[in-house]
Amino acid sequence: MIKKTFKIPDMTCSNCAMKLESLEDDLDGVKEISASYHRLEMVIEYDESKLTDEQIIMAVKKKGYQAIPV
Amino acid sequence: MIVTLGTVLVAIALMLVVFQPNTQSADSGTWGQLVVAFITGITTGGLSCLAVQGGLLASSLAHQIEQDYVGQAASKKQKISVRTNSAFPIFLFLVAKLVAYTLLGALLGWLGSYLTLSPMTRAMLLIAIGFFMIGNALRMFNVHPIFRYFSVEPPKFITRYIRRTAKGTDTATPLFLGALTVFIPCGVTQAMMATALGTGSIAMGAALMFAFVLGTSPVFFIIAYLTTELGSRLEKFFMRFVAVVLLILGFLTLDGGLNLLGSPLSFQNMTRSWFPSQSESTAAAESSQLSASAREGELTLNVENGGYFPTTLKAPADKSFTLNLVTDQTYSCARDFVIPALDYYELLPDTGTVQVNIPAQAKGSTLFFTCSMGMYTGQIVFE
Image (tube, rainbow over all chains, first blue to last red; front, side):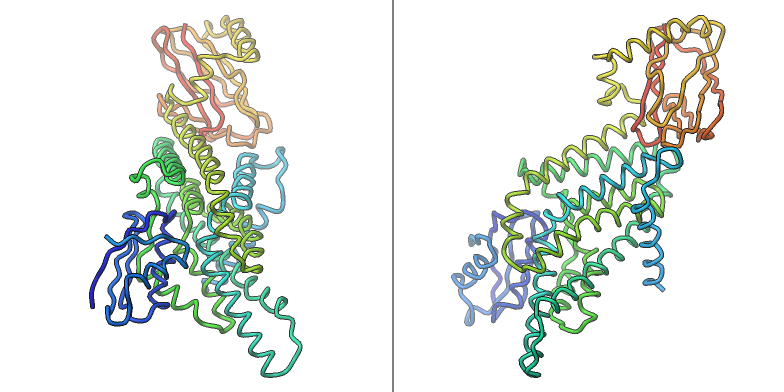
């Protein structure tokens, strides 16, 4: 399991964070996602053998946001 | 028990909203506030929350239940109209949301009643609410990252719980989800919640939130029913419009608070000093003519449904006098008369005269007076 932080610059409200956290249910290999509108970032804890950065970025894009690895 | 209480509150709120009080028999300020809340809901409120409850909960809910009904229809080989069926759970969702927010409004109004013991406390609350609204508007304009902190982030365990609950497909789910939306209010809803707190009344807080959420309901229903991406598109288009409306509401609230503090810096008090209107000049001249009676120690202020007349009174300096507050079938908030500098507050009778003893004031000074909501204002200039 590793923990990575992504900047999400286009969040517009605290509920965008909730949308991003719903990726917990959508992505296989995710243990926990903590997104913050205040900091415009998303911290994701996941199994790197099951999930890649690119897959995370694509999943975030599907939700309507841009994810930039920190 | 809670459902019954909520239903009773909705009924009271509905009566307040539906039966438009005429200005002869009820508080026009109250009615005006409810109309503003409703219009805010139907315009900015519904749109600003689309990405939140409309986009996430209602649409996923509608989609989920639609799928469920499609499954049922297929298995039973029955011709069931999916559109008709999907409308009902959305309706349930909105009814539950309406009840929940009405209860929340009542709770906030009740809490506010403990905070509004004095006009000074109310003024501070109005100013805080005004700043909160303006901060949220500036956040929407993306002026500076600091304004993001004006948005309240719900605790993670709550958002996770709501998300997991949204996966259910039984008929209780939409009701439960609708009620849970109180935990994920959007920016405009939060501002309206702050206003409900400022009412300091259970009934008014409930009616205010009811009117607001009722206003948001048609937008929610349409978007949830269509379950398209229209929500996010509209959100982008209307976010600035929402911000402008919130900014205006914020400044109005802040101004009300400043009026209630008796501050010369409020918009009304400043503009009255800088640009006295024709009617006010005339009124001032009339009150100057009355200075004979003022010199005898009496001045009269007419407290009417539309405010105070004349708005500017002239009184002799260094001499105490009696101010006669005359009401004649006055039912608006102008009855709640406040002179902040003297710490004077009185709920006037709807018809009658109340005398206030005004102590001697220095030459050139001004005493501001206002209603308890900071809406209607006026001043006494000492010469």
